Length: 293
Ligand code: TA6
Image (cartoon, rainbow, N blue to C red; front, top):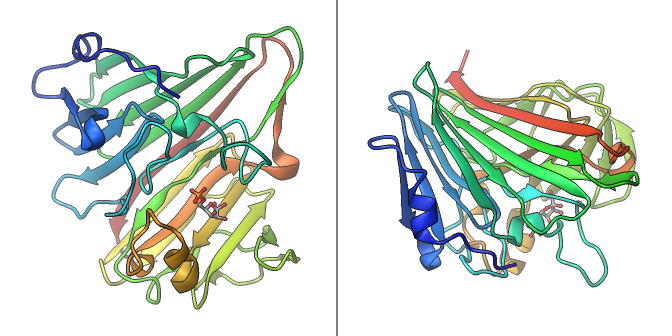
């Protein structure tokens, strides 16, 4: 949905040496943030974080080289903002409308610790005030905030559908989800996760429910662990498309599936959120990394 702030309006939010507004791929407006500790890139289309790296490190986020950058298409990779529903919906865009809407940049702020905070607002949303706040520093902190500004209850799903850059899907493992209820989206089966860590040997598409746990992506190939710390989220989705699904996705390279994994912080299914009028919900995710212990 096209609601593009003019470049002149966007450039009023620039901070010399820290925040730069530019015309990105597909001539879509984007914001580059550079701090002493880390740097990031965010497109106004979908308020989509397309890059984050800590100083001197490999990027933490995966971006597909085949991604579209079109007004009516989602960007493939980075952090798709999924709202107000997760997954397919008859006659509607998959994973909701927020990721294919042009958001407004409402504030850029240099914080005392040297980090930069960007605030985005989702226009044309009647029932709720929707903000997305991105803080770039030695980690990436994202807060998805929904306030029910209507006069009736408002129910929605939300998800920060993060794509992580990894050395190779066969060599990584994801820890932190043991004991969570696991809904397998491919088989429709449900079980409790008994493994200490998740390893990948085929297409994997799982919704872990009733979990507020930090997920850790252990990547010996890159000698690092990525931590996905969250609050205000009771669902975690783990996804890798593997060979056949990758081939079926036109905006995803056939050879890209070994180099990414999605660990998504959400509230989906029975954890969909219902806000009474005036109610407020905050989904907060911090992405950080450390040398592999
Ligand atoms: O989060 C996992 C998932 O729901 C998968 O089923 C897969 O469809 C993925 O999202 C990507 O969805 P998209 O609509 O972005 O192609």
